[in-house]
Amino acid sequence: QQPVQSPQAVILREGEDAVINCSSSKALYSVHWYRQKHGEAPVFLMILLKGGEQKGHEKISASFNEKKQQSSLYLTASQLSYSGTYFCGTENEDGGGADGLTFGKGTHLIIQP
Amino acid sequence: DAGVIQSPRHEVTEMGQEVTLRCKPISGHDYLFWYRQTMMRGLELLIYFNNNVPIDDSGMPEDRFSAKMPNASFSTLKIQPSEPRDSAVYFCASSLDREYNEQFFGPGTRLTVL
Image (cartoon, one colour):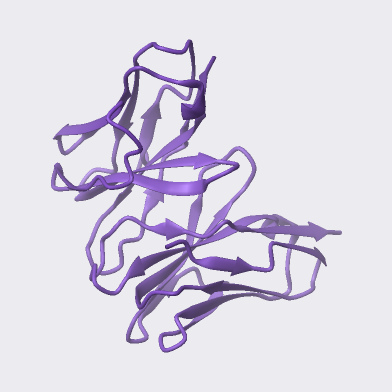
C-alpha cells in the first residue's frame, strides 16, 4: 500500500524551513527519501531504518517514528537548489530490507528568491 | 563511477510494436530494480532482481511485460506488444547491500507509444 505524503505542495522563500511528512498503514523496515527535479532521475537523500540507524547527506535531517509508521523530512534554511519533488519510499517490515520501494505521490517544493 | 546506464533515453514507437529497454547497473551492486513513472500512478515498482534472479515481479502489469537479467551487468525490460497506456518514464536502479538498500537511479527511458 502506497504511503501518504503531506503536504502535496509547498512554496517557500529562500531561507525558510519546511517539513514533509510520510505515513504508512503498514509496519515498516525502512523509509527512504529522494528528490527529483523535472526531467531527471530521483536522487537519494536519506535512509532511516527501524531501530534508529540512518544514512544520508549531512545537510538533510529526518525522523522515523516506528510506532506510528511515520517519517518526516526537515529542510532548514532552504536554498533555491532544494526545489523539486520529494518522494518517500518505504520497505515493509516483513521484507527485512533490500526490497523494491513503494513510493508516495510526492511533495512539490518551490523555493522562491 | 559511471552510475546506472540506461538505453535508449527516448523511444517512440507505434502500438503493437515490441519495445526493449536496457539497463547496466553499477558494478558490484547485487540488486537491480525496474520502476515506471507516470503522472497518474506515480513511481511504481515493476520487478527486482538479486544476483540476477527475479525476486518479486508482482508489479509487472501484464503478460506483455517481461524482464531478464542474463548477467550481473545487464538487464532488459521488454514490452510486446506495446500499447499507448504503456507510455511512461521507465527507471532502472541498483543497490549494493541488503541492509541500507540505497538505490541509485539511472536517467530513465521516456517511452511514447502512439
